[in-house]
Image (tube, rainbow, N blue to C red; front, side, top):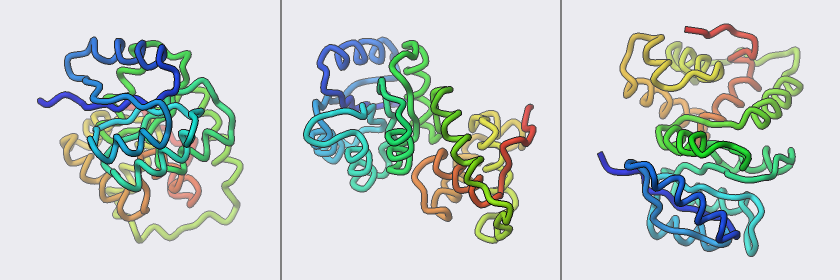
Length: 222
C-alpha cells in the first residue's frame, strides 16, 4: 500500500521539524513538502497533490483559514487537518466551514496526531475534545423547534450512516454495525458529501444536526 503523502504548513521551522519526525517514524506516512505560510501551502498542494495537509491557523501572508479554503478549492481530494495552539471560536468555525476535516490542538500526543492523519485520509473527521464540545454546543443552540423534516435528498441507508457518524463512530465501526464492508460505508459517505455539497464528515454531520436529521442524544453504542 502506498504511504500517506503529507504536506506540513506552519511558520515555525522547529514545529515543522518536530512534527515531521513524529509522522515519519510511521512506515505508512511520508512528508512530501513543508510550507512556511498559507500561500506557499496552496501552491505546494496544487503542485504535489498530497493526501493530507497538516495546517496551522496562524501563518503569515495567508492564514490557515484562507489556506484551507484554497487547498479544498484547488485540490478537493486533499484532506486538511488543522494542527494549532489556538481554539478561539472564530478560528474553529471558520476553518471547519472552509472544509477542514479535522481540528487538533498542539497539546495532543504524537500518537493522536498520527491517528488523526490516518483518519482524515480515510474520510473521517477528527476533533480535539475541546473543539468537539464547541461544535456540538454551537449546533445544539442553533437547532430550532421547527426541525426540517425533508430528507428526500438522502436515502434511508445514507441517513443511517450519517446518524452513526454523528455518534462518533469510525467507518470501520459503522461497517460492523450495519454488516457491510468499510468500502461500502466510504461509498455512502461520498454520496452524502455530494448531495449535501460538503467536503468533510464534520460538515456533513453539522448539516444533519442543523436540519434535524440526526440528534445529539441518540445512543449509537455498538
